[in-house]
Image (cartoon, rainbow over all chains, first blue to last red; front, side, top):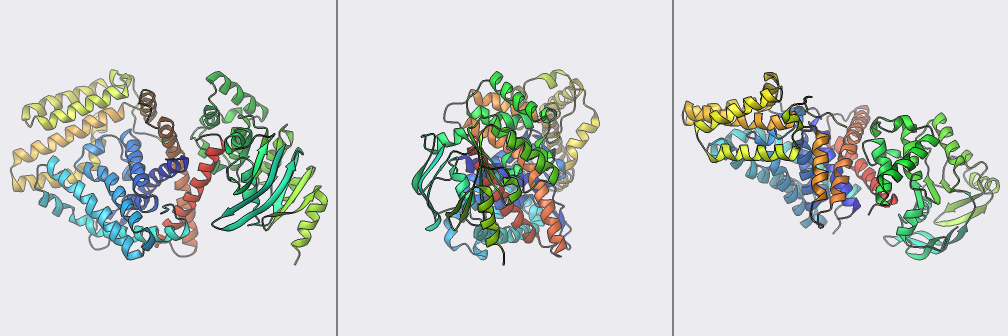
Length: 180
Length: 222
Length: 197
């Protein structure tokens, strides 16, 4: 890891923080507000690759844990990890790693549909695979109930995947960081 | 004295600089040239941020990017890119920590530089809240505390207003060190000892400011 | 630096070392999950209440800590009442509330600066393979970059509004990412130029 990697990791931790104050968009039909922050997870993996992306998330979550109000709504501190949705935060690390790893594998043929599939797989499936069992365990409900409770957020996550995939393929052409 | 020996730089198979052979010992040296002429790459060779594909760069006979970085300071166009730490004094300490200096020595050096340019009141300020002019002065201070022998400045006044530009240049003119200034603002080169005009990766004119600048501006008439 | 969630004070809890507080929190949470019993909830409740009293925190600090999780807790409560019974629902929600309040007790009595100092102090004793200076640099750089990314975001958004692209989020994020990446690259150069490697 060289100086450039350190700087990029810090940059994406900061991008995550900046996206928290990005005004949430409310989807017209369902009425569930979506925040821009989980796009930052996809971008970290898709722009920096697996290791740097995952470390950017570790750094970001560390700053959240020590009490900086970097989550949407100015939330922060250890309490956010103790709440029922803590798994979705911890899942950021694995999610960025998987997106980064897949992006590296498909780097040479990275088109929009491929990037979209990667974002959906790593940013939605992997994230829920951590977050949903977490809720189920700490709230003592069945995983299926926890999943159906989270379904309302899926449309927002799909929108975010579409946007993130567009950004990832454009940045790949404009200023590629992953080199293979 | 900084010596370029048949220096060429290639990137992705494309020649950026070809066969530069120079000895620079004048105290005030200007570099001019069009966008994309290779002057930015040239400037980065001075302190080892770029390394030659062929040839060598040496300062007083010493080569290698480590030695160059130790003795050649670099000021960038945008101070926001150069300031690393959230608080002014932390940023000034950063370079000194890398040199492995003790706390007292760091403090003494920082005090000297801040006092010299009347910047003491900025010591505990948040760097992102400084004005553009203050930021560039702090970026310069961050370089000066390291006591370099030569300072390269890559268009350091582009983002400054007229007043801050004058203040910054007054500070530069006061410095004892050898200065290499890359600039599109030709007025800044008044009183310089030598100006190099870079074009197409080569030094196309080299001499006193007046004739070199005259040739450069004549080429821009259309 | 960014404002944190710290509430000023000089109690025993404020003065305790961050590492001790974190370890106590870990023990507390593990205990709550390990012993699934009402008696444990009751004892934990007393401990949290005592903690709030000692630290001089007011009920509204607790309410503020719980508010973000309020609706999801309501949902979980409803699901539990429906699928199980009122007793289990109350138990689960009480446990969440205690976990969140205990965590907020640590957050509210410790400044972010104290945590950063704690991390740096901890790194001093870390084994050689841990890149200590890099970790410290990364933390500082992030704090430096946050206001910078925000201002780039605002600038680019204004430029896109001027072009009528304010609803196009891709058109907003691409320039923000590219600009800040270039910025980061030059910062990396500036760091190297100041003899860090």
